[in-house]
Image (tube, rainbow, N blue to C red; front, side, top):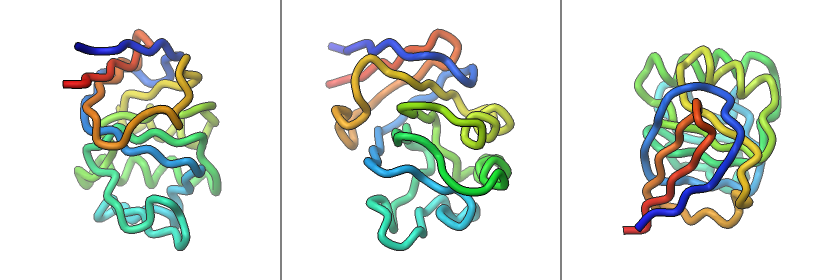
Length: 135
């Protein structure tokens, strides 16, 4: 059985993977290692965890506009998330997702805090849907 959550599409494409949820915003510049995909921001709830291949759900981005290029570097290094879900997209993350061709949605009908780490999800950035596979 699956659950569909409606959202707003930001970056086209379909991405599937295990959900990784952060209650805190993410800074990609100096917050995520572009070579390993590991969150390196000291004290961040995801510190030490890899975002590579995950459906990364977090409220919004923070930090420098260079963060867009870090997201692109993650993709070039095969360390990017498979998809991004934001509560509210802002330009740094949206531009990075578009440049890196990472499917992205925001404004989901279900708060990202209700998503469960590790469940499989498929994001369709064109349709603006999040499909949670609970099997």
